[in-house]
Length: 114
Image (spheres, rainbow, N blue to C red):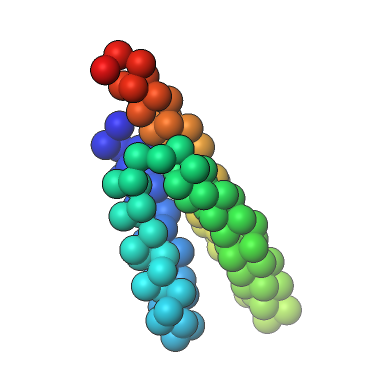
């Protein structure tokens, strides 16, 4: 289960770094602290973190990828590698959100056996 928490934490730190790059310190701090909510064992907290990752994958990474690729295309610069990188970041964020299901399943199994 530790690797699931690691992926979720890395996804949130990556989102926080994105906001820090643009000087949005409050959003950076919120994203950096968000994985600490996993210490709360309520299912709804994990679902909320999953929802935030899915929404961020599309609204943060999706729009950023579109803008960055458009800028590269307008400048007639190579954009293929950038599109692959940004697609990978979106897929990683969605995978981190999916990892939340494993955390919920492990926690529910522990409740059954305890």
